[in-house]
Image (tube, rainbow, N blue to C red):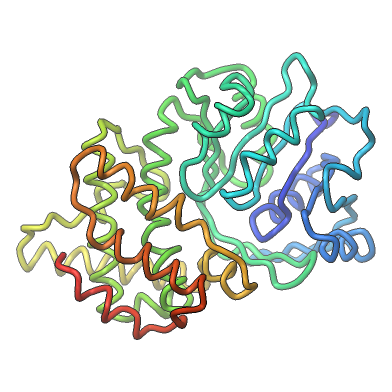
Length: 344
């Protein structure tokens, strides 16, 4: 298994942690960063991975782009951990570097992008993955895991295949792995979390723990989550647990006072448990980059229209994040007032 040839594309927070843990376990992945500064730092000083009880600096070989790899390089698998808007092109560019008979890619994006990837390179070449924990890049080649959680992986057709088992065996050195026959349901569960934590974090500019101290944020969190879950159920999805029972954070629109109090309490507890987590979309905005909003709340709005489900909060927060990207709005907790002016 250690001889498996692994390519990892995207060495930010999550990609860096996965790469580092694989290296620690004796694998020899080739890293493609998409950023010369990150590549140079890793090749010069190693990849530093910070965890709650340990810190390790590991030797690694990093390239800035696929074009720098030997033309005859072939890999058993490629882990694609870049932003969602880049993954389809990355998958196309990766195809010549996969073993022609059975090489495959695994997508680890926020949002749902797998149908587009499958259309570009073939469904038989794609396994979908979900990262159920957070990570931050403090600087080029320096990453920190900021919370516990699992990796979920699954074939697009729900098959429990031999290659899925092989991938799970490799990835379990990073964190516990769940192989599922319902990756779609798991993706929608993770999407509900991302559409709340990731996007609200980009709107307020705060860490998870800080923003969920605010009752306005918790109210928006529960409203956005409900819209995503309602959309998934209307589309016939069977929601699957990723971090928690997907209905635990579901607040019915007609809920009474006690139910609202309990759901609010659960969100507060989540904020305290994962307080250090910093939104990946916020990290993108801080670096002057666009977010994955079109694959998160924007995707929900698009699918909800097909299902006839109203999503006023998701529509509004999508617009507001785009305004931040365009420089027309500032990152601020004050943005919550406008969001909550929407009827929920």
